[in-house]
Image (cartoon, rainbow, N blue to C red):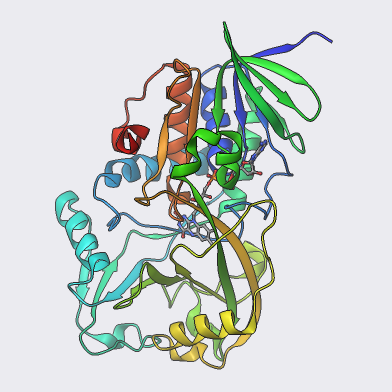
Length: 383
Ligand SMILES: Cc1cc2nc3c(=O)[nH]c(=O)nc-3n(C[C@H](O)[C@H](O)[C@H](O)COP(=O)(O)OP(=O)(O)OC[C@H]3O[C@@H](n4cnc5c(N)ncnc54)[C@H](O)[C@@H]3O)c2cc1C
């Protein structure tokens, strides 16, 4: 059989890979996307109905220019597909003013003139119990994205532009050739000028050189239905993020979504954003213990008392791929002369950037460099 040649092969068509496939195809490239599961699926990092998007970026203000582009690109996708993906609910932040999360929000908002209100009247959000010494910030132009829908739309737009996207065809190995790369899958061998590896939790299996920089962790997400659920719909209840004293990361959650529009599960979704227990993506313990659930519910119910005795609808596991500094990795892979680009280590906060990361990856592959301010996410920082 003759080997089929492409301009770009994308290994891993999940969050980042779906957008990369679209942007490469939109730039006129002959694209092959390889995904080991169906699209979308719930074994990686993109499942679970909703993802928060916000701009007052406490993780580092350098992300804000990328977020400006991400918001614009999400809007482009919505216009192109004729359907909403971003839902503006606003975002309420709670925490002590000297907590690094609260300080980071203030710093990013101040530096980039992001609308952010300090609230003094706790009765504006009656569902919350705000502890003594906590402050409240409100970011009006924040909300949530629909991850499965976004991934599916990028794939369908890419296919409309001629990209071939093969589901259930894992990349087994890859190697450099004099003219590009050769990729072996479960079914065939393909060659390409360029390879983008966006394998999420499997990235260090596909690129063992990145093992030291990547740790996969198991995360838990709950959906619960309090009494009077009508007080928790997006019209009355925003997304939220709580920086607890003496705890890494933050608690966060969403309004109760209409399952006819957003799909199941019903109820308020909430979780703890932090690095959970280390996991092998091929052997994840998907069982969640009563103790794990109780601990999470009790912590969140301290701030949203209606959740204390709420009916627990669903508990799911999901994966994070964490870097040592919790910043992303988006770069050419060293030693590949620009033929291979990698995107990974999104450390539990990458989805909002999918629409801009796809564009950056297409530029790295097709132009050899990106004009986006993403230098701070390069691998250089680990050398
Ligand atoms: C519970 C949870 C909540 C989150 N909340 C937020 C949030 O509110 N806001 C936010 O911005 N971010 C959030 N994130 C983070 C965000 O979802 C991730 O950063 C993002 O989805 C990572 O995308 P990815 O493309 O790296 O991984 P994935 O979406 O998992 O995609 C990787 C793909 O590669 C495929 N693959 C792997 N190896 C191969 C191979 N060899 N061959 C073929 N295919 C392969 C996988 O099957 C998968 O489809 C959350 C994550 C979790 C788990």
